Image 1 (cartoon, rainbow, N blue to C red):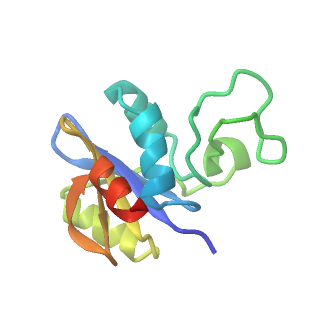
Image 2: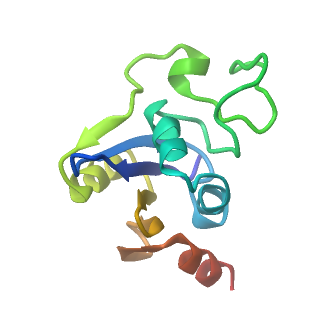
Length: 142
């Protein structure tokens, strides 16, 4: 069973665009990868816009052969692009609460959003308010 999460950003219209990530959604992994490798708004948008994924890795654009069966090292596997699935596109929500509610119904435990202050995270189990990912990594590790 995966530690499910949802990853999102605010659009220029003020809506929330997000997607599902199946494995390793806890801050020490997904949060750390987002903090280290996804800090540019264009890079974040392009990654989220590829839709639902197995889990986040440092890269999302392959440089060679990359499939679900034969993934390129350190490249994220997306359900649509790499597995040929449909209905796995990124979704748009009017509010952050709609985003959280939708993905909580999909059993997501962590919710990440990229803002002008960087990555924020919330969890339906451990804390309610969105907080900087770096704060949650250090609290959960110590």
